[in-house]
Length: 82
Image (tube, rainbow, N blue to C red; front, side):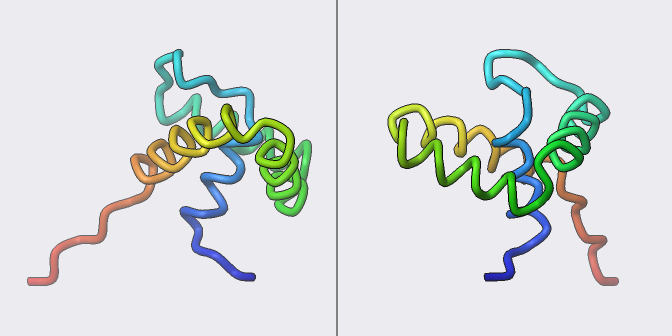
């Protein structure tokens, strides 16, 4: 299944070393996302996400919520049509 870029970023955030309890700058977030994709690949990030949901759904759900929120915050906002 093909998702959006934001989905891809959220999956990489999920697989990254970023922690919800630690403040992060956009530059730090992108560095961690890049490192996760370099380490696991796009498919590997998805597989790690699925594995965590299967083994620890009680911790995977809050982590995915964090990942989605961060991915949404990192997404560029479209310019208003004028």
